[in-house]
Amino acid sequence: MRAGIVVFPGINRERDMAIALAQATGAKPRMVWHTETDLSGLDLVVIPGGFSFGDYLRTGAMAARAPVMDAVRAHAGRGGHVLGVCNGFQILTEAGLLPGALLRNASLRFLSMDCHLRVERSDTDFTRHYQKGQVFRAPLAHGDGNYFADDDTLDRLEGEGLVIFRYASEEGAINDAANLNGSRRNIAGIASPNLRVLGLMPHPEDLVDPLMGGTDGKPLFDGLAAALAA
Amino acid sequence: MKATVTVMLKNGVLDPQGKAIEQALGHLGYQGVGEVRMGKIIELDLAETDPARARAQAEDMSRKLLANTVIESFKVEVA
Image 1 (spheres, chains in turn blue, orange):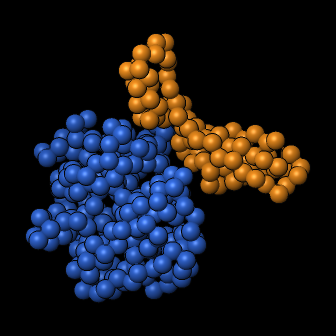
Image 2 (cartoon, helix red, strand yellow):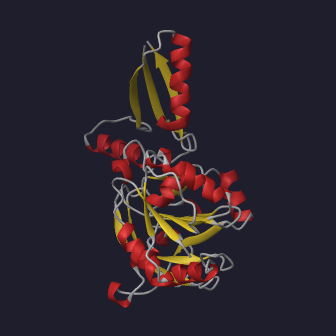
Image 3 (cartoon, helix red, strand yellow):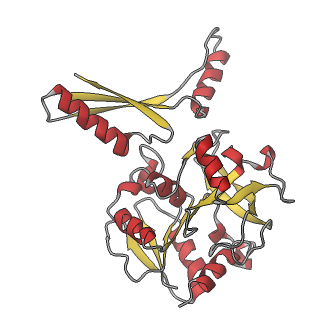
């Protein structure tokens, strides 16, 4: 699997993402600057977390209009895989690659803590190394992670099975207490209709080595590497 | 021409900042404040001199960048 990580000014999670990808694939991912327009040769394009363009106007708004995004859109259009984490998820929604938007956390507080995610389906290239219904731990670090979409969009997402992760209790219960940022229907991560574009707020790349305090996020990267091994 | 774009969260979209302001006004002793909603104002200095074209340009900019129409509505005033 050849992976590329898109870097915008203000992005700060690209090196952790590179560690997670290199560990899973054995190859160093390519760092792609936001002014580049050629993503040919890449199987996976990752948009990592951070605060692109200082979160000016809206989180992800500026990055979503950067030159590289037409190439990301074309990559997705060809059926290429795209992973957006945290600011990356915000950028994918702003770019129209995933529906909905990420609003200010309902509590108005920046959340820097662990959450638990329930895997809603395991038959995707991103979740194949998890079990359906499995709960895993993932760190949160965001001020705007409150997923919003109108009822029709939410019903469509659920009907088509495109909700991939939900905020859950450690036991897997979906309730308000586990929904730390106030997201509608506890949604933490969604996918495109072809299941090749995934966006999620929490950081699986932060738990891929016992030295980081756990390996809960490792199956996501190992599963991707296995799915895209060529 | 000068175009002023007012961007507000749509009705039905949770506005936690507005809520926080509403509560703070209550703490200051102001009575009878209903719902508070917070938005932003963007001023554009446009080379265009025709009001209708300036408005159309500002509306186009609003749809493409200044507002996220999934969650926000916008209003353009030209002067």
